[in-house]
Image (cartoon, rainbow, N blue to C red):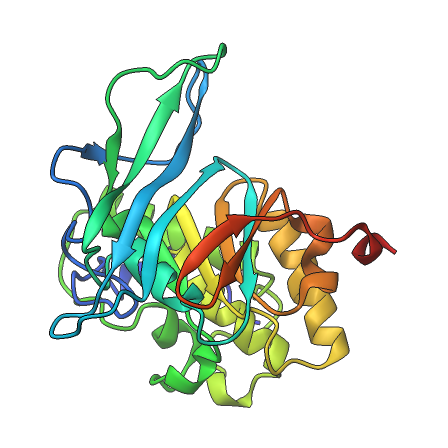
Length: 280
């Protein structure tokens, strides 16, 4: 196993690039009245993601794909979107990630005190603070090694010692958090098992320390063991991250879910608890 300590990143001197895939360099798609904010734990109270009456119509079309969508998800919670294919679930994830701009409505972070009262105006959730892992993310791996894949798109340049050390620690934390510390970072990503490829896709996002992690069908295409491993991994990640997933695998994700919503055809979202039968 190749060690990943501060020295491993010194030669790379990497810094996140605005062009990094799965990320966007603007706050487009969000209310201009909101200030830049993060879904993070406060000393007093709490914060939560809030989608407020969001509709989306693709440019040049006359029909909405999403209609008056509203939801809220508290920090360090796991939210699940489910429903028929083509109903608009992935479209909603793309809006949250800043990949598309809502036609109307707002997507913000609202802070509350311990009594549940708002603390100031809502804040903008910028796209830089959101990580998104698409369905079958391993199909988009481009690098020759695990290490290069995690740092793909980062410019190599001379930086000061403390900055490089900070980046190295972020890299190591991301690798450790998804359980990749047991494999060589020189290994070809395509040679990994399905479960480890999915872990790598998560590490690519976690190294950028997002406040909100979006997952599109995180268990798709995995065998039973890899699916169980990913569920356990998501359980651990939930302790420090706010996660919103789209999935048809309701039974396996049931133990993680704090709130769930069904997306109906026509882009209509309704909060709906998962059936208790999934608990068995």
